[in-house]
Image (tube, rainbow, N blue to C red; front, side, top):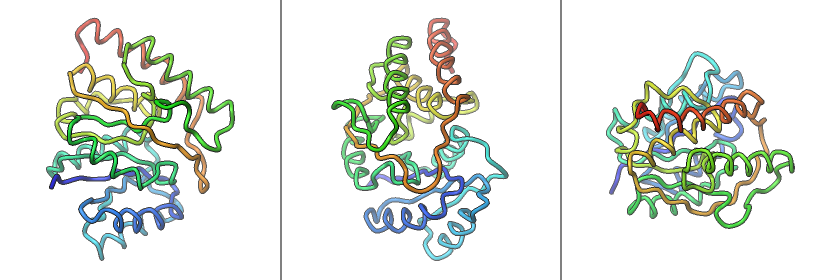
Length: 239
């Protein structure tokens, strides 16, 4: 049995993690959970830390402040590598990523190195997003594919699963991006290193509790990142 870790970044997700942690533990007795909390004012970190005292499968990294999604995942990846986990699973705390789908990821990763939960591989499978947000996401993925050549329909999604070898091949010190750009960067670097990538269809349902972390800064970062990745790849300086 491969040793697997679910990595969940949080900021003010107390209501959601109160539901998510018991559901994951109940469904997947062989998984560990790592919450990477950015000093949530609502007490998310305190709740997770207390939970972990009674169940060692629940881990937490507590950070000093709101430092962003990308750096949260990098912290989780370092923890995963240092503690010799075989598989890392990324997911959001807000149930936009359905915990039931993890079984599909674990099955698919047996014959692949990176498995991506795709909203766009079978049409458009997004529920409750405003049309503006949906169009932004859809065309951001088309734009990424054209500029980088990345053969993925949903390169910006955050629900995915990867082997430790993928993360060990990437110099995490050079990961600076957040949001959409972070997801694109990891996917692109895995692809360029020759790892086997598979997309599986998921249905993405917009969060009910909490607020979206999307901003104009995140969009601008993604627009620029695809060009940086292409140029660095062409110059042979992709780290």
